[in-house]
Length: 481
Ligand code: NDP
Image (cartoon, rainbow, N blue to C red):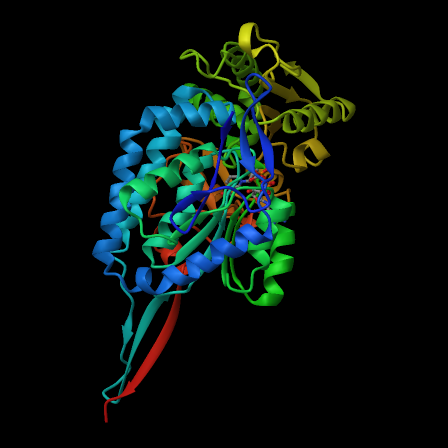
C-alpha cells in the first residue's frame, strides 16, 4: 500500500514515531494509502528546517524566488492529469471538476504570486520639507499554513504561494482526510529545485500535528482555512502568543433571487452553486431566497434540474455529483436532513444516501437534496451543513430578504439575482458578507480580497492582502534637516 511521507528539509521522510493513519477513498469506502500520523517531534524538525532556510530564502532576489515558483507551476500543469486523478480519488470529487478547476487554479496560485511579488511595492510619505517616511515590508519568518479537505491542492497553494513569494519559509499541514496532492506537490518542489527547508509539509491529525504547529513558539504567523469551531480553538492558542493570524472559516451563504432576474441564468447557476463539489465549497449557496411572484415556478424548475444531476463514480466523465469526503461527514449531513424533517421541512427531492453499483457500491454518495417550508431562523437554516443540501424560501420585500440573509452568524459570500442595477447595488451594500456575486457565481480574480465577515473569518486572502499579511511593515522616518 502506498505510504505518503512528510516533506522535511528537502526530503521525503517517514514520521519519527513510525505511525500511520488510513487514507480512505470515499468513492469506494476503502483504505487505499497510509498517511503519517505526525506529532510534535515531526513538527519540531520541520520548524527547525524552515528556520534554518529562512535567511537564504528571504534574502534571495525576488526574481529568483519567482523563477522557482514558476517552475513549480509549470510542473503542476505538466502533471495536470495525474494530479486531477489523485484529487478525485482522495476527495471523491468528479475528475472533470478537478481537471477543470482544482488543479489549474493551483498552478494559477503559484504563478499569480510568483508574478505578484515582482509588483509588490511599499509606500513613502512626505508631509513637508523636513521629514520623509518610507515603509519596508519584510518577510516574517516561519509561516504555519493549515488547509482543509474540500479543495485540497487549490487551497493549499492559495496559502503557501503568497507566504513563499513574500520570502517566508513554511511549515504546512494539509487535511489528513485529503493529503495526496500535497504529497505529490512535495515531489514537484524537489524536482523544481526548491531549496531544502523552504517548504515543509507535515501530514497528520489536526488536533495533534496541527495543534503542535499552532503552538510552536518559532512560528509567529498562522494562516488557517477550515471550520469555525477549529478556527476558534486556533485563535485561543495563537492570540496569547501574539501570533499574526488569518482565519478563513465556515459559511451559510444566501442566494437572493428577485422576480426580475434572468430566470434561466439564475436557475442554472444556482443549481451549480448549490451542488458543485457535492456542496462542499465554502462559497456554495445553501439558503435560496426567491421573491414570491416566481417562487413556485423556481422551486419546480429547480427540483426538475436537480433530479437530472448524474450521481456517479467520480472517475466517470458523466459524473456531476461525486462522493462526500468521508463517512463521518456524510453522516453529519444526513443528520441535518433528519433535523430539517423534524423542523417541519418538506424534502422536494433527495434526502437519502445514493446507492451506486459496481466499485462504488460502498461509497459515500448522497442524493442532492432540496428542502422547502422551513423558516429562515431554524437550525437547518442557521448552521453550516457543508454538503449537497439546500433550502428554498419565499420572500416579499427587499428589507425582509436582507434581514433573512444577514440572520446567521456567518458572512462569507452571497449571490444576488436581479436585472435592476440600483437594487443590485443596494442589496450588495446591505448584505454582511465579504464576497458578493451579482448575476454570477465563483468568478475569481486573484487580485480581489477573499474572506468573510462575522464568524466566517478574520482577515482577507488574495492579491495584496495576502502579501501584506505575510509581511511585517516597518516605517522609517528620516529628518531631512
Ligand atoms: P477543519 O476545521 O476540521 O480542519 C481544517 C484543517 O485544520 C485540517 O487540516 C485539520 O486537520 C486542521 N485542524 C483541525 N483541528 C486543528 C487544531 N486544533 N489545530 C490545528 N489544526 C487543526 O475543517 P474541514 O477540513 O472540515 O473543512 C471544512 C470547513 O472549512 C468548512 O467549515 C468550510 O466552510 C471551511 N472552508 C472555508 C473556506 C474559506 O475560505 N472561508 C474555504 C474552504 C473551506 P484534520 O483534517 O486532520 O482534522
